[in-house]
Amino acid sequence: MKVLAKVLMLLLIGTSLHAQDKPAYQRFPTVPPFELLATDSVTTLTKAQLKKNQPVIVMYFSPDCDHCQHQTEDILGLMDKIKGLQLVMASYQPMELIRDFKAKYKLENYPNIMIGRDTKYFIPSFFGVTSLPYLAFYDKKGNLLRVHEGNVKPGAILKLYNEK
Image (cartoon, rainbow, N blue to C red):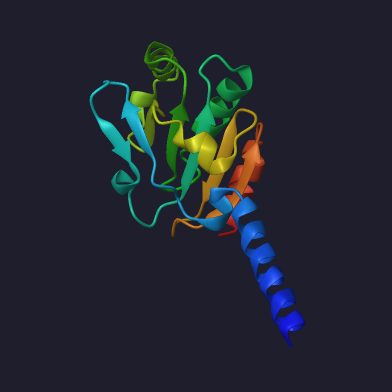
């Protein structure tokens, strides 16, 4: 009986340790509690500011990354096709580069886009980011649909949101 109890204890410990190996986004599959410093360098952008019942894409990017630039262009091209899509763009780069990126793509014309600096380096640690762009897709209830490292074709994004 003692042997059985020890075996069960080891199994429970092993299962518990394995669960902690999962990245945070898998343990908490909803839009994360991000805090970004807005491009005005004063305002804090948070999850609480997202509109309810609308899909969200969290994109971790670098303004000088060609793939990130192409992904931004692709997503902007979908804005009129995906009703209510909210885009949260976070970068670790200096604010000046983020501001230039925002101006280049005229992101101020899109009220459904939040862009800012991830000063606490929260997004890459939450998702385990290893390459850019990194995208996390959430449905209108805030539930994770999928994550993707690298570019995602516009058609795949449309399919993902038009199926839900």
